[in-house]
Length: 628
Image 1 (cartoon, rainbow, N blue to C red):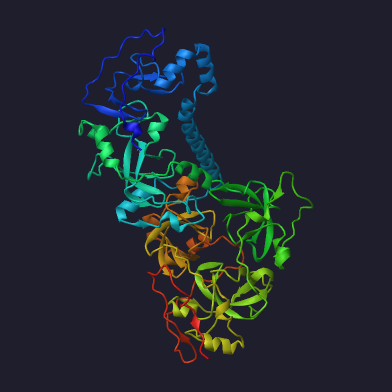
Image 2: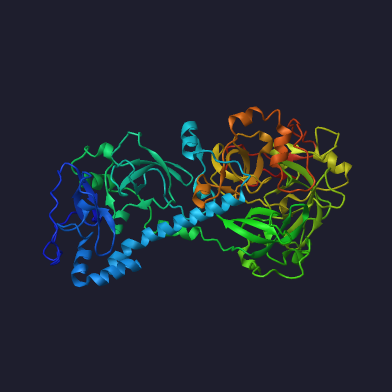
């Protein structure tokens, strides 16, 4: 790691060509040292020496840090190459952007990748802004200031397996050292210095320059996956100068010894970190692909839609019949709401046939292997049947878990679910859940876990009791053993901050907080909004992202509602509810009823103890225990 900090004597015997005739640059005071990571220690420039351009490879840098007395070359390699190549060859190489030596090629490669990545992110940002004109502007919102001023904790990147770097975040934690641009510098060129991670918040890290010890005056937030963050040693291999911040430049006389001491035993980013980031942001879905997606006007069926854009794995889908491309739907590529062409027919799901007689030019079906696979189930034995009762998250009011009924059993483990008391006569608001879905629960789930259960609309016998309701409706509860009992060790805790999709307006990604945890079920609160807009979401939902995801992918983040909006929420709750609840334009549900949570008397049913809000893992103990 420290090879780049070792000094070496200048080899002037073979570095100068016969054409060198420039005057020597007088040496600067040795009390202002810097480190340039191409194997030599240089003095800190005073700003008078100016800049220089390598005549061999064209790299621009601080003149005093260049090689040889005449400062015509950035390194020994370029000096020697110049001597053995004609000026014509050098100029041609520079014009073509192809350094003539392998070493020079390595120096050029990574900055080019960084520029391309930055440009791609810029393009994505412009594209996203064009699609979200009506979205609330960020108005200077800063995650760093928000986290710092309120002492918040953010959910770690490892909680989000579907997000970039979610499965290969590694040991990135407080104390890790990186090389970053030095902003405390008066030089006209971009220089770097080493900083340590003081605090992590998702992808964002609070960094402190080496040498500042306990002084936090120049601490700054930066996205770890950004193009300006590099592992220690990157400057050495890239020929970039390491310059100590101006505030502390007189603090030490031997910066090399200081860095060697500080970095011995310290962790840094993996050498291939930027490559992993780039690979994790490659998405298989492409524009013009055709998919089947839920019809937002009739939940019970799907329609053909075309991928219009892909940002951070999120897809903007335009329904195929939309001529002006305004009838769209946003979801993640791993969403359970999208499927390959032919899926509906294969399982017996309702499907709206397109008015188009043939596929539009350039459109093609997305390959089936791109879609999220569901767990295979065995429906040969005891299985779900029509008419069975259960509890389910209402797709039209995600803050509510409601009394529900299985209306139809489809193939491959899929079920059509209706919310009791508010179903349309034609079943147009039935919703398709897979049998392993974490959004359906056995009878008694809410009771055991102290969650308010929303009874059927108009049901007068309150407080609601399942035993009485089953008897009155002459129905049975779906067997507990058929439900998904897997609870991953997800890592979420109450109070953690994250970025979450407002599923009632799924083009919006908002600042949010985890407020409750019931095994794998999370209660997501949108900061600045009333609790009625909260959503129950699974811990593995592809609609949850780490802090900094929007910045990384170029997606627009919706900040917390401003104070003025919060103060007026109570008086304009209905209008705001209408504005936020536009994901599905089907039959609107009432907000969850204001019922007191009361336990069943337990005469007919016995229950196991539920999970506390602090639990992030557990067994299947939150299910009803059937008494013989």
